[in-house]
Length: 354
Image (cartoon, rainbow, N blue to C red):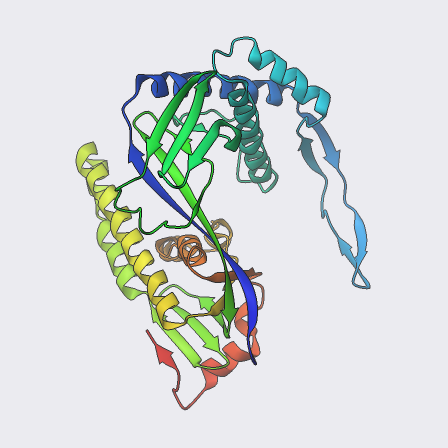
């Protein structure tokens, strides 16, 4: 990249504050019950129809948008239906009316997520069931005082819950950041802090995601290799936890599952921070990989699927996107880019190894 350009970097950090309030547990119980009711009503009003193969002209070429007949679905989204659903849920609502709006929005989010997975063949034709205890609070139910560092949440008309992050260990990290929609759980509140800043981009790095490494190319720095063998070794060690599961040692199994997850996240957090420190003001181009496609039983043997499952590419991409500018591209022919071909054929061995 010659010269530089300005890009907007949006960052989000989520922090947890413990709370102990019986009103919150009652609100969560009502929220889950009402959320499932909303999902039930939406499910009963889904319209099923067949979508037939269709040919469109794109870029001067004919392309088949749907290669075969598929039974698709449409969620009811008319204003009249949503108003009727809202009126129905308001009948037994002991809380502020905006909580019903929050329930409806969350229900549609869950159903839309299920719909996308179903159309891709990754979900069954089974109505989603809400199991996790949580409530998602709308901005209209919140009042934030950035001077006192407090959040005031309306529970019922005239009744509020106040939470402060003054003196918390993360308070300095989010100085000047804005508060987003919080999530309430039985014993804690999750607060997302958002920040938007302008970054002067001076370099572009294209990354090829592999089992044991991230291979990159930068027009300014040359060829870059990030070694992931330590992460692979850690995942191999913790595969032995399956022995505890086979012997019905549930507590031992869960202990090692948590330990593996914590060490994996620690490694990836440090990896993302290291990439940002080593390559500041850079745009990172990554493959938009779908592990379900890579480890399909029809496409790869069991040994291959097992190796692919050890590398959490999605988590690496998400953590890096929280700290730097990330662009996702189709993995098709990504490794055949000229820069990547040169890196594999470069006899000089110049570049950067991390």
